[in-house]
Length: 274
Image (tube, rainbow, N blue to C red; front, side, top):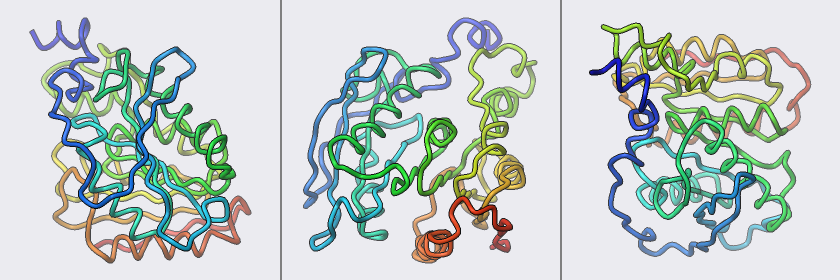
């Protein structure tokens, strides 16, 4: 049965937030979110939220962040994460739903998710007048794959992945280890290949206790990155983004370090284990 599902309905396994949708919980309390839709290149209507930067910060002069959530929730369930990024980095944050998630139309697959990410990126440049070189991409789990694909297409300020896999076949093989899963899936999401070709600074964090995507895959991604990079392992962390203050401080510090060395080819850095 597992093999049959992997062959005929793997998107249902890859995108549980579409297969078993979570309730829509609305805006985080006290947030000043702008809600809108944007059309992707394949014709889907993509639901998005824009959380402006804190008061006193000019949108066009500052960095902005796009948040690519994982495959289990929807845009509303990651609202608190968006608010925290907004506060910690003092930057505007754009979040969106993949096709079939939340209020977005269509069905999720590799290309439709890539198109949704591209639509969000283009909206930020077009509507908020933010240069591509000022856009930070933050991807959680499968969102790391969508963010990595976008970073491979367009220059950006930083790519940050949390709990990302090396490729979908690798992730499927880990999950369904008793089957030849890697040879049965069509989805690729080949982060390992793409990340090795990026010039964009890369920050990779991964929990040592991640049971969904093994820590070793985060290590391989970090080793494959060839530009300015930082690997931030978190002892005992599972398959979720770190929330401790030292994590955000490490991201802020890396942004400072790479502000003048971005795309210069300076030797990459690896942060010691935690």
